[in-house]
Length: 267
Image (cartoon, rainbow, N blue to C red):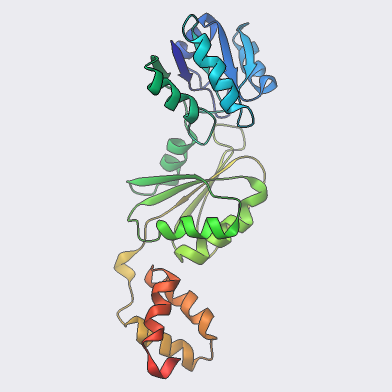
């Protein structure tokens, strides 16, 4: 049997009795970083063998696990939280299904649900994971969720925080936002703000950003064409005006651009 086991996202006490039992009894544990996982195992006197299973060897390691699964019980863990969710494991799950090899999940903490609850924003929510590294890909992904009527939960690394928040604001416009960091740890913090106001707190630790759904009740009463004319009268450059109108109306910049092309006195 293959076990995908949830581990603490910060506080080492956030582990289930079943998880401890499974980790002690399996033949070996596949983990992202043996040093990180050893700290957890030492805390609970677990001496099971650890093998590396991370994004750089995921395909190769998955094949070995598939082979071993015929005779052994194996646990899959990530550095924190549940495997597969923005962590290695998806390739293995797909292979297990294809080969009809049994597997299960040992429930545990998840930064997704913890952050959403801490945010205080209303359900439902959509999980985006980490945004793509390339700006063009980030913008394309965010455009896909521009008109989705749910909150958005996004993982953000500290060194990408400033740029990611800027790109999110540029595409989605102003919305409520909760910036959550260091969950379950001593310095856990939840900062309630807006995308326009941004985040000016400590940039340290692991971050989850929860963006509220579009405030549809505040949709402007004037048309997009009228708003474009207003910005034109204010001397705002056309490309900047299109960008701002897209934010206000929660629509794609290209949609505003196409409308602008139909305005004879605005070309």
